[in-house]
Amino acid sequence: MDRLEAMSLFVAAVEAGSLSAAGRRFGIPLATVSRKVSDLERHLKTRLLNRSTRQLTLTDAGHAYLAACHRILDEVGEAERTAAGEYSAPTGELIITAPIVFGRLHVLPVVTGFLAAYPDVAIRLMLADRIAQLTEEHIDLAVRIGELPDSSLVATRIGSIRRVVCASPAYLAEHGTPETPNDLAAHNCVTFEGLTAPAAWTFAAGKSDLTVPIRSRLRVNTAEAAIDAAIAGVGLTRVLSYQITAAVRSGTLRAVLQAFEPQPWPVSLVHAGQGLLPLKLRAFLDFAAPRLKKRLLQATW
Image 1 (spheres, one colour):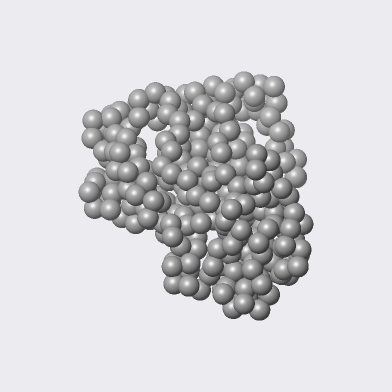
Image 2: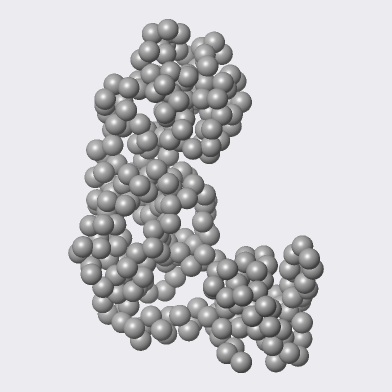
């Protein structure tokens, strides 16, 4: 029995919530995963998992063994990275995650430049509008937009972005331009589920917040769709400033209520930062941070 493989499958099953999900992660059949985990339990002479048709739960022994597996697998991975030279020269694969639109507009161009400068490093760029778990998902670096909770993660701030209300000039000409947040009650709005609640928007009013109800005529689940709808004249929408730079500069969208915008959100590069950083990560941080700062400064109007 390959105990390291069995440990990896056991950890993956717990993290993913099922044996089948662990199999998909490793590209092996469910029956193989089940057999290897069962072999591990027989070897240990104890049950690690309680299996049901709906979920997996850890036994008391499983909880203790999971912690040990994390420690052992991390140490093995560290030894392999050292042996492969990742601490003496930038080499190997770097896994990075970023929000979809920000990643496409700003991270991807920086990644392509980095790949040209560091031919021995490969990058897996995962774009998703969700908060990925760096340790559990084996991610080296994340681009995070918004205030960061206290944690053991290390963050490098690269700029900030605004939350902007905007509409097409044609819509504003027909319906009027809102002068205060309370004017939104008379307007059609396009809401984006990933950024704000569909029923109300919050603004800055002096040193306090002002939350106003809005009338959502169209509710979408991507920023691109909200922006396209606003350009088409459906109504006002609220998105992040970098997402509409080109549209504002071209005149197809106009920002409103700028005096009432909330505090800008920080943009950060976040990594686990435990122990000595692999040179591939250190090299990317040194390469990407100043370039992303410059791009964010340029993504204004």
